[in-house]
Length: 199
Image 1 (spheres, rainbow, N blue to C red):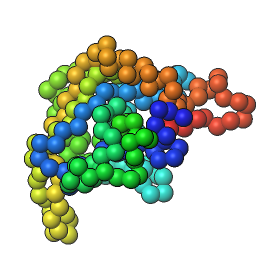
Image 2 (image 1 turned 30 degrees about the vertical axis):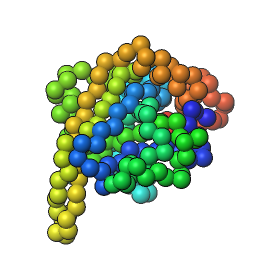
Image 3 (image 1 turned 60 degrees about the horizontal axis):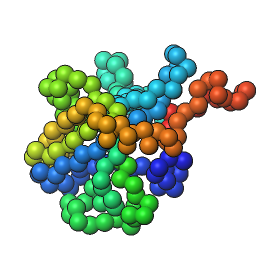
Image 4 (image 1 turned 90 degrees about the horizontal axis):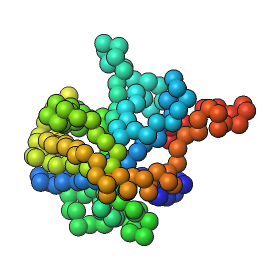
């Protein structure tokens, strides 16, 4: 069991549905532990990508045949009980009361607008995110688009930035790593046990 009671509630995912222009979320980048099947070593990733799956758990591909990837970052924020799916950020949700919510948040980078924001950050910063660094997400504007059926929908124009690791950030990440769940390396598995999942 990690610092957050994942078994009971799961780590809340950041959502900007209904959010307003100027909204900013920032947090310390925490390690995401993933078993590397080629080396048998459990890696501590600052940014993770996995192939997306459909509702039946089957891998998804673009028409070109390339796999559809979903990125993920794990952040230690100062959020506590805030409902990020609400347009009113002063509202709290009973699902994540303060005494349970540690501020741990996942952000999944799978949507077009989120992916574009991360790609723009890579091009601008020319550095990779680091465990113990600061990751920020800011809504520059709320735009309107149309679905294939002609219905209007809103989406955020995001700016993503990450900053180098600091001693304070590395301490926060190390504290999380001490108690975080992680997959078992092959040598740590009992005989006949299947490879441990990444999560």
